[in-house]
Amino acid sequence: MQQTRAVEFGTGLFVFLGIVALFFLTTRVTNFDSYEGEEGYTLTARFDNVGSLKLRAPVAMSGVKIGRVTSISFDDEMLEAVVEMRIDARYDKIPNDSDASILTQGILGGQYIGLEPGGSMEFFANNDEIQFTQSALVLEKLVSKYLFSQADKEE
Amino acid sequence: MTKILRDVWYSVQDFLQTFGASQLFLIRILAGCPAAFLRPRLIIKQVHDSGVLSLAIIGISGFFVGMVLSLQAYNSLARFGATESLGVLAALALTRELGPVVTALLFAGRAGTALASEIGLMRATDQLSGMEMMAVDPVRRVVVPRFIGGIIAMPLLAAIFSAMGLFGAWLEGVVLLNVDEGAFWQQMRDQVDMYDDVLAGILKSFVFGIAASLLAVFEGYNSIPTAEGVSRATTRTVVLTALSVLVLNFMLTAVLIGEV
Image 1 (cartoon, rainbow over the protein chains, first blue to last red):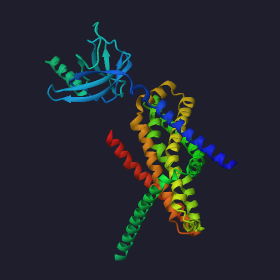
Image 2: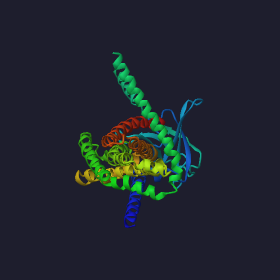
Image 3: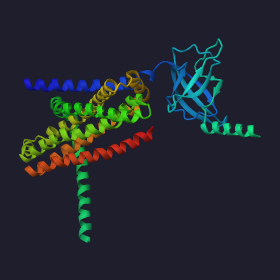
Image 4: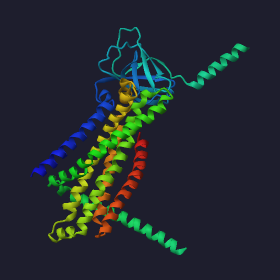
């Protein structure tokens, strides 16, 4: 009997430890708590070029993450990229003339959407579209722009 | 020449036969599973034997794997001035690959061999035939609880391995090498994904648990009832488990990455 109890105690402890480890992995190691199932509203924005923006990329305002990109698609009538993003419900006072641009974190970092506040007194609501957008910078275009400007100068 | 061809054909035949036999054995085990849950004590005993008794080796291995991962990565990342990425690197490596795979290999060595030799010895000492004589199905009484115990223990062990590994990586990186603690955890949280990384790793360890437990009980149950037969069954368990875990790992990774 004593031995059976020891076995059961050890097994209980082991399963408990395993679940604690799983809990640790899901909460401390991932950002699970910060983007699933939270309250929020959806905004869309159209870009000429989204660069290498990925799904779940952060949407930031003044460098603070306020939401995530939830879908990236291509509109074949307007010939533009359509990005949907979900903004945390607590940030519900963003002026509706704010502009969105695709920026890069650090030198090798991923791309994210940065919102610059506008001056309007009206706020974004669910399913609004961001009117003012600025595309991702594409390195090749920058280089060719620079080269053409140099060529123009020499003439 | 024909002799070589014939030998090759025989070994192919042998392989396919063993493979088929293990699948049929799996079906027999699965058929016995519902009944086994009526006797949870047998399963608890097996979770204890393959899980609790493997805890020390899994925990210590995880800890040192995390430490060495951190140390190696620090020296490479320091060249690019990116030592803050240490946490991300350790977490991805541990949850996606090292946790499930190394745990499965250690599990085969620690628990798989014990299962195979235990069942093999039961076979060699006619205990299994004795049960059949008493109209007790040895697959249900002996094999199924061990199989289920192994499947329950494996994902938990893999999670403990990854968590201990991260503790080791943290100790080496943050405490000993002075990587910024905030960046270590924050970058990890930003870049490790719940589904693609952590749950994919747990899924892997679950599949490896099925493979390792099945091979161990299959080899033990079908061992030749001699001292040599038991030792061969034990060896084959480790070899086959290691091979199938590594092959399955590649296939699962390909499927999981393709899905993203």
